[in-house]
Length: 252
Ligand code: 13P
Image 1 (cartoon, rainbow, N blue to C red):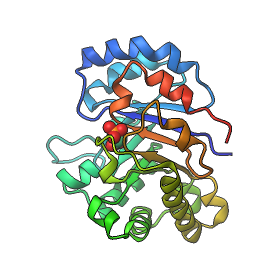
Image 2: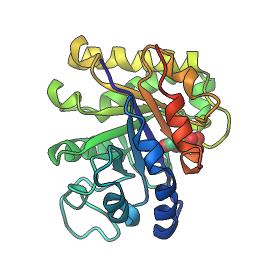
Image 3: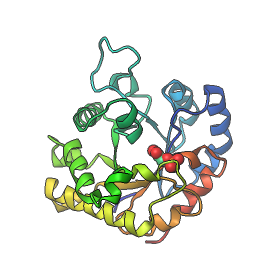
Image 4: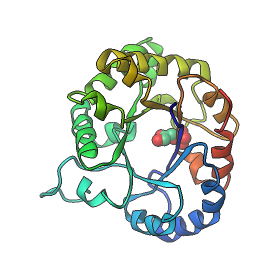
């Protein structure tokens, strides 16, 4: 069955030295939790140090973003070629990238393809904003983002994608989406995947929930049949991160 993925997205936090200190403090405890895939997503500048520190552990590394081209005149960007070998996953289309850096479903789709070509597992983020949520547009909006982000993938490649459902209004607000509602939207995502790639593939693709996940609510999400993990922001920077990951191991 689907192995859950618990990923910590640090966003723009921690210097390299702070990252080393933090990870040294949690890595043994985190590494011991084999039932779920454990991933951390530090800022790009800390990836090399983290790769050195986590070598030989079962803890995976994700980049928070990348360009879809291998190289070129794109000042400030990082390419899949540079990430390959350094990390195993890459977050694409996070709502903060869509909101502040002009990412569109089309660029997200290009990044998904680029990641897969280079052997990186894309964690593709989707989610509605508050206005869409209040207008009851969530299901259609999210299904549309999934479809657009995965255009042109074969069923085989689609199986390597991880999708993160992150309602924008729940991110960093302490106002988490309740587990039943998250399960509903994630089930809509799985139905969309079934239409796109067939039921067998849809049953293999991991779908996470993200948005104000913490030690108090993680187990509730993990008990839902379609929720296969979490993409966590603020709580992944705390010393309780291994505890949160351990609480994600539930009998569903
Ligand atoms: P928070 O867990 O801080 O709400 O952030 C969620 C998120 O955006 C993870 O990518």
